[in-house]
Image (tube, rainbow, N blue to C red; front, side, top):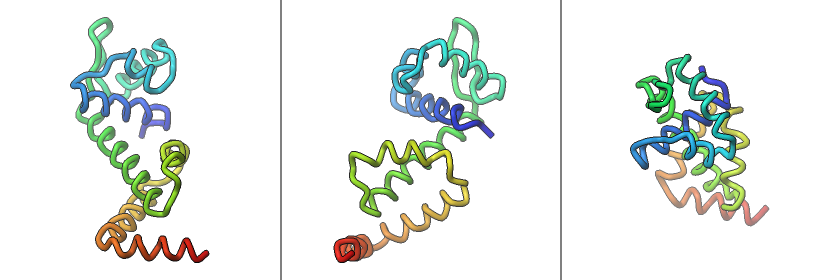
Length: 137
């Protein structure tokens, strides 16, 4: 399993490749607010662990293993954003909160949160009832 830091890189590479068709070291560095040299070192680690195929001076691509993990990480991030929105967390806090908690939850917890999000989304009156309850408290 990748470390939390590796997950951040895999997630960002996946997002860039899905949106632009490629991911450059400079793009990853900018998004993660790190130095390009840090990105290069991490890409080499990800290559060693078979999450990316890296060729010096030529670039890198996600392996099928890397794509699978990247897809799951993006799903986790989006699910947690949905969950925090449902429970009424202020929009300006959601991104930072997700970044703070996403690596600390087990996949079992993520799956349970997914069930709860599905429950609330299946009937929007449930979300309204939750809002009413929050306002009463």
